[in-house]
Length: 282
Ligand SMILES: C[S@@+](CC[C@H](N)C(=O)[O-])C[C@H]1O[C@@H](n2cnc3c(N)ncnc32)[C@H](O)[C@@H]1O
Image (cartoon, rainbow, N blue to C red; front, top):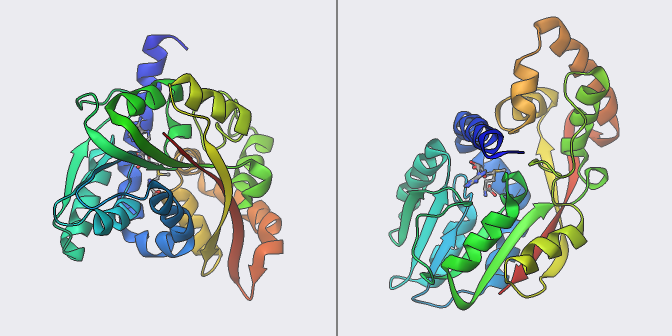
């Protein structure tokens, strides 16, 4: 991709995520209940000290950063950031609700951070790097803003075979011709599933070889409508494709998805497994 194509991909992605923010804010409790093991792993491995400044990148509504906020205490600070302004606004509202006083909020593109060199003690990023147009640039920027020895703890998704909550619908849309087959090197949920490629990005940016651990998660939906709402209102790349289909086409896709997701249905609800690659480096 050239610089113009990169810029337009980035702008499209930011607009999509800005639109998804309302759904993430409304659904945050359920998302956190299903995924706190992933966020808590990251904060545990980051192991921030009281008084530290921790930066959260691609923070969405900020739940992982809020866990870190408790550990850095009154003398520390968590800088919650995302490139989608509506996500940052939602995170800030949530912090007010929770009474969190040691968090700051910033609209920040992780690939080009408007932050000084060596200015933070730790960085967390849950489910962000694989969505970035140039993950190498984002890891290099992360290394630049981290003080020497400062840790980075991050999570990306493992392969589609381990994440049917996302891959069932993608497969249906690709087979129907509604979506191009995913390019494994282009930004997307499954862009950093190969541990060797992930390690190369991380060490190429000047970090140590990361410790990588598989961490399980789940996606639970009360019924098929809740699953469908999640896909149309919260799922970054999928949602615009689904919304672009006619009512008749949507019904056809729903039928195929019901059939594909049947193995995960439990008395009308859905309980679908997921797997993340969590990593820590410095
Ligand atoms: C799947 S959501 C994850 C949100 C949150 N980290 C969580 O775990 O709940 C991905 C987030 O990455 C953000 N994002 C994508 N590309 C970004 C970039 N280049 N810089 C900063 N944020 C980015 C999106 O706006 C979105 O909020």
